[in-house]
Image (cartoon, rainbow, N blue to C red):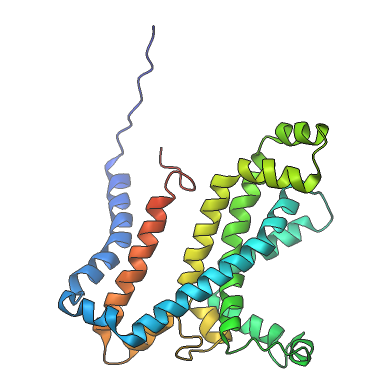
Length: 266
């Protein structure tokens, strides 16, 4: 029985050196946070009422934004993967745009669309829906920025899933929605979980669109990233460092948790 030996290539010196510089670019900022972290004050900072309020609001808005993304993004991902229609490439470009658009520009765009003087602002205002500078506005801003992570991850899963199982279920008389709920979603569950967690993590860390569209009102729209910015701009940089480490820890936990579902490591 023959065995296949894995080929190991030796990198030329310039490539290895450049790769080391690239790793340093990612590692040094984290090392700087750990080095300057005021560990003796960490417990006091994390227990402060302002920090807890900002963390609570961040969890509420990011979770709400993720729910909005699930309600809107799952059907969108399915349509993009399974339905051929005119303008599909335009819709995909619009779906991807928030990932590359500067967050502040996204906030300005939201304000001009959904603000009181925006495209649909008058209609929303007449219906009693006020989004700018409210908690609901923070949720909308976070959903706008984070939903593409869910849509693109799930669209790829819908496109590559085995449709024969769905066809067999329909042949046996199952309704389309039943097939989607009992067959399609279980097939793409790993990607659904990965996309949902990525969406939530991106919403949790959102800054630019939130501060532009929803403002920075303590207890209303001041999420943890905004609170970190205010602390860093003031004389309490130690608190900003500690809370930045909290956000870094959450990000690392997400990456480690999804390493086998979203990131190809082997």
